[in-house]
Image (cartoon, rainbow, N blue to C red; front, side, top):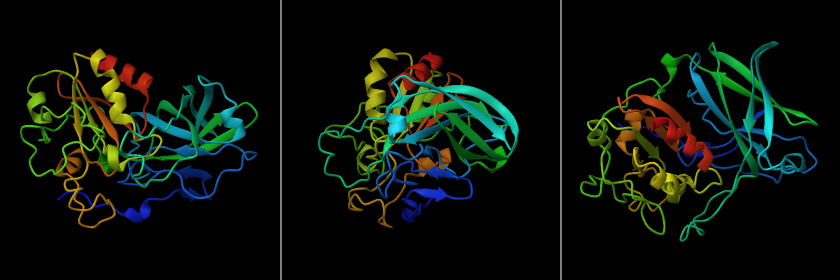
Length: 314
């Protein structure tokens, strides 16, 4: 059975206990920031751009994407700013590193501008690569010069995590194709026309022993500033990555008959997402020529991050 999703969680979650804000990861989990406009004079607020639902594995290299809510202190940063990040467990420093600024843009693809959606007040996103050694709560302290903003992160035992992790084998899932769409009503929801990544199923490509990138995303139902453009980002770099097979997998099986309403209880999620262990989207699985997941990039990435990821496979 495919996973079920609770549309009531499509909200910003804020925890006064840990001083962190978590925003959503597409229509399967949470949407973009809602609520009141931020106070430009307020201290910057960090926003977790990863699911809190057991996706961060202890003892494994992790990518932790986070955003900064649009305040005066944030927008004054240069576009290519690098900020210092300290990761600690209580008073013990686990890691010190830097993260580069990625400016968030929010273009409406032709035909999607009228689709109801919420806008995030996110000015930037950053992605930290680190290893959280043990299960538990960690703090990310981000040095913004005039102030320090903190974000709490929970790492889980890898045995508790459903989503496939780097180092695990990519399952031979059957994904809908142009020649064999199966039960899916809309092979690709990208507008104004479908993307070109639906010619081959994942199980077919695994037998070819070539690297592949498998993107799970639903463009027409993921119209936030950070998750909506990911299919277009992959299309932009496709000509530069001829040695990597590219696959786009939609999320919903029956969007048309469900009225394009992901809160409709009749909306069905493709069974392949259950095999990947996903209860959020978008997510990009980077698979090496041996069929092993080399990396997974969740929720937000830009051209530069994707270029490095694809080059690592080639």
